Length: 103
Image 1 (cartoon, rainbow, N blue to C red):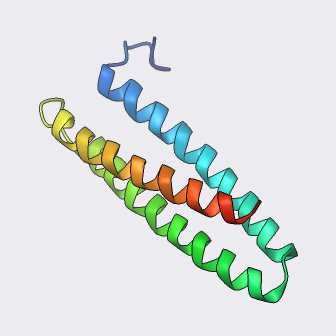
Image 2 (image 1 turned 120 degrees about the horizontal axis):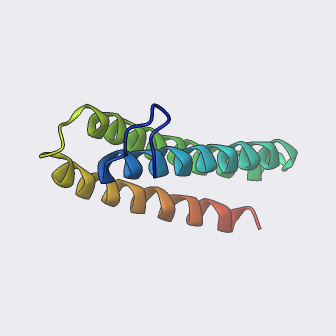
């Protein structure tokens, strides 16, 4: 895979690009949940709000780790990648939990 400037992307660069795309997808899903919450009754809206806020915190945590990963050199990225993978799993679980409440 080539970088837009013509240089070959490293595994690290490819990984970061994929994670950014995944975060964009999660952001779109969160936006959909926010829209659904607006349509819910008052009691349900409170529960949805809590779920959405939890999702946003997880997303922000994951985003911070991704930004940190971008700043690291090639040698340190595998260590930070593990932390990002764990954060990603927490985000995925939070989203699954929140989504189950919207059904």
